Length: 253
Image 1 (cartoon, rainbow, N blue to C red):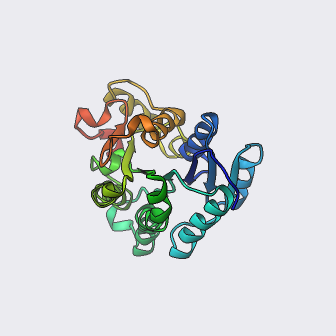
Image 2 (cartoon, rainbow, N blue to C red):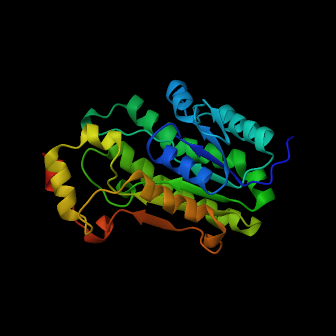
């Protein structure tokens, strides 16, 4: 096993978006990163020019892959200091049109994957008194239309975070959740109409979408020693959206 005195993070869903931005920020501050994603081609492209990473093309919605993720990371870097459970899939369908197969696909990645990755990483994180950050969503804090599977999965992640924090705290392992609001990602660009964009801007006190890098900074902070007394918390990185309290009419069209 190689000796590595650098801190090491695992980031799932690392091939694009918030996961890639988080991986790059960890590298900027001198950490090593295990980048995990089920999209092998996109992961290979994203990691090709990055130093200090290993790329693990794994679908974390299975116990075997979650365990392999931990095993490969420890083999490469010697230890794990942080786990960022960012991998997720979205579904925006009416309740009547949400098939059980689609429901299970969303739950398998968004909820089961978080449970399995944390469970697999616990022994390594106990050794380092490391940190876990689960990525929820503002949709887990506020109900909306067309999010029966996605929003429910993210609400479950928020409670799962608190369960994990309560149980793992005695081992010095901290667990927190970041709940992003509307973020300028490729997914948002694909599914948000101009009416929805305008409505979000009107409802968000900061009057804009967030950036992937802004969410990454919150994640990395929660993994850092500066957040050493923070656990069991949900940070809504949402421009104040959760504070405004009402739904968006444009989403109901």
